[in-house]
Image 1 (cartoon, rainbow, N blue to C red):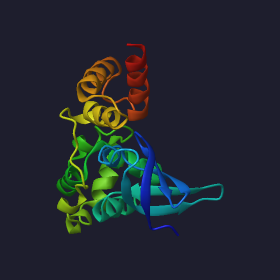
Image 2 (cartoon, rainbow, N blue to C red):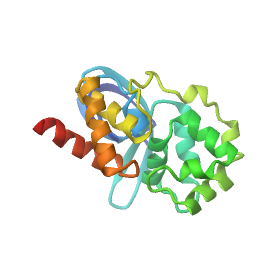
Image 3 (cartoon, rainbow, N blue to C red):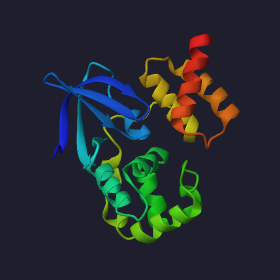
Length: 202
């Protein structure tokens, strides 16, 4: 099983990265938070990796820290939470905030993450509250601080746009307009598509 990748970042999107390792390109799913902390395309990158094997696919999930990877493992151990849902949860809150929310039983905060209903949030708290207390939130911050000053969905969208090469001012304006029109609960991928349309036509 692939446990890690170290190579050159070839492409990156809101929740995906392609890494060239000595001529072999690997497509890796990452959280929106991790995507915002990846280096620029063409630079060296290293990710911890969890390999999920299914009957019809072999999927790679990448993480910038051991703590983020441990959170992913804990999340996928919860009933009815698969790898994609776990990555979605990791996209909704940064590692430190997620650990705090789970440890304190902040169900309302967890339900603000797209796709997480109250029952799921309650199940996450019930099953992970004690486990996350053993994690180190500081080591989960990632190598590069987020550049976006906005918060929530807008902040994630700004970070994704900046990483795709847009100027911060452009990204912030587009993100604010799209989030205001579509709402905070809209999936990041949908927000990103609309923001890119606006930037290209504007």
